[in-house]
Length: 447
Ligand code: ATP
Ligand code: MG
Image 1: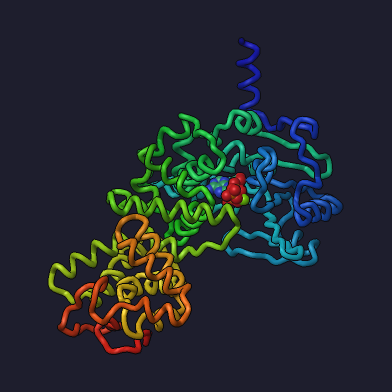
Image 2: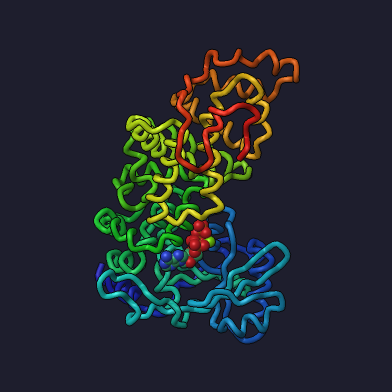
């Protein structure tokens, strides 16, 4: 008992890693990517240390295919850049090297230390993170024990400073150091804990998890662009549904994810969001392309619907009210979450096409088929129908219309101003912006 305790204390303070040989983990150098192997070889041949680190080692130990391979080294970025022929220096604040091998990009970072003097006194957030350090310091500044494993392709050993191998075996996510302090340094770690938990089916260690609820508000201090990147990682991980369920179950959806915060409160919206997430997960798993714009459009749709209704109830005309509602919702979100313009443009197109898909007579359906966003808009309608918010019969009609021959299409068309179409308001809206194509004469799709 006492011996164990002494061993433990010794381990906590030690600077020597536990070394796991090939027989214990089974990761052969052939299992790592060509690029990361090459980078390590080059650096080691020049007298530097170089290891595959982070998620790749963790995933390989679990039998999961890694997304990408990162290398950590004691060589500084300029040396790496000089030694690796096809490479580029990136980052201004913290320099990294991207080494290019065919399609593969290996991110090579120099060992870093967390610098105590660089923390914002009030929030505890790390302001600068660009102090070089040694391997021990590099391991200590990483987020979770399972992410602080160093694989040396030359010896095929894994170096473990924080008992990450044990936590991997126990399927536990444990932060390195004091949870509160580490989350204050970088609140994004809270989101990462949940995301990795859902991805790997791990539980978050109770001590790591305990302060999350209370500190969730700190996510508000994270620069919106970074938050957006993290959101995207979470949503496109192939485990988005599981992530969101966990966030909800843990009561962490407040504050941690600004986008989901509001949406998950609406009963109708929740079903729609869940369907959109499940569909996205499925596509990621099947290696099909997913459109972040489509997903974000789905996540915010019920917000748009609510704002739209409020405006119509206040007497605004239908289509201008929709456009104003879209801007209102996006303005509110971009404050916290910098959704890039290339996405918001597509999101707006998808939303704006929804009322236009009500048209099933005259030339309009033909014009809509030609619209560059038709397919996305139709998929969106199908999702709305599945969630019960749009008529199933309307989505079904569009499905048939797309697949039909010219003769069949003519037969499918409804008589002008008949069933299925909502009664249009007669007043032409004022207001500027792209206008109510619904109210004008065909051909449509001027935008
Ligand atoms: P994924 O499977 O999503 O790629 P990952 O753990 O590899 O998971 P990355 O964002 O690729 O995540 O980060 C690589 C490594 O960098 C991590 O394994 C971890 O060691 C370290 N790291 C990343 N983000 C943080 C952070 N916010 N704080 C401390 N260390 C971090
Ligand atoms: Mg990674």
